[in-house]
Length: 198
Image (cartoon, rainbow, N blue to C red; front, side, top):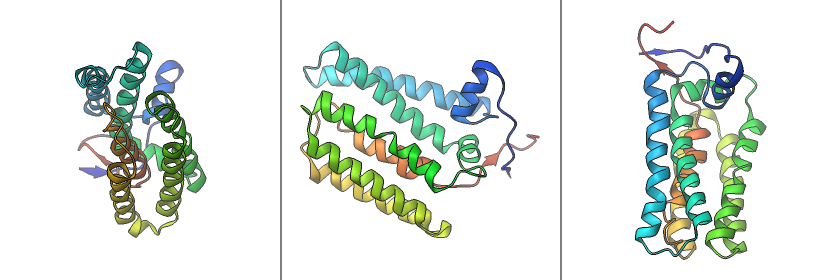
């Protein structure tokens, strides 16, 4: 395996939009990983909700499918070598990463509103934790960033388990949400590439 921070320029048109989202130069294996598990999650989450007698309406079932697709897709995409070298390229500093995580408060609001009867305590607590943990990770020295991120993620699991009454049918949401952002996205790791790639 090679470590290669150089990426090809994003393509033009619709494929260029995809490149700017997942990083240019994704391998076929990376693409399959970013497509199949999220689709499976997006289909499975509403089925699981129905099986747990959540009583959700069709809008809630569609939203939970989209959330599952986005969480699993985000965990995988941000962890790929292609994603690492794109999202951690030059000029991607504190604010770029912090803003990336901050826009995800929309997900927290959707869960608090549609699935927890507009639970403001849930929304505020999970949002403040996201902001605080993201800032701590990003301000940590690079050599400490990985253990700090794992510690912050572990604490998020305690918040999920002990901080709130579970959201039946969405018990997986906060663990996946914080895994996607605090661990998968924020950590700068070596972009290993297949042998023979130019």
